[in-house]
Amino acid sequence: MSEEHCATHQAEHHHGYTADKDAYLKRLRRIEGQVRGIQRMVDEDVYCIDILTQVSAINKALHSVSIQLLEDHVRHCVVDAATQAEATGNTAPLDDKISEAMAAITRLIKS
View (cartoon, rainbow, N blue to C red):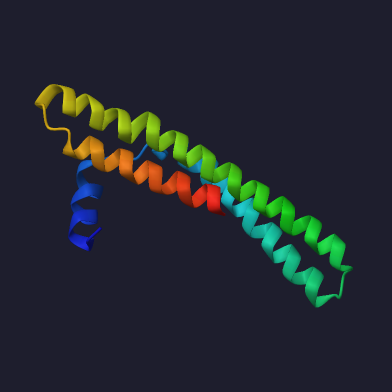
């Protein structure tokens, strides 16, 4: 996506996560704190398995955020595109949103 397209998109569209932005930021700050905790653990030569346990917790937390963002995208962005497609007969934006969602799902599955 080009920077120009992104700027236009930002000006015209509110993202599905906007209503829960504070909750997302709180979750991401918590994850950030966990990452800093792992840095301290490494610095303090903590046992490997204990560090891996924390890494696993962070991965689970990030996965949870990813799934919620994907759900918000489908419920808001894809549904909006479907509504517009129905009203205008132009399905190209809907096809784009579905392709974006499928690419995101593929990335999540592979990670």
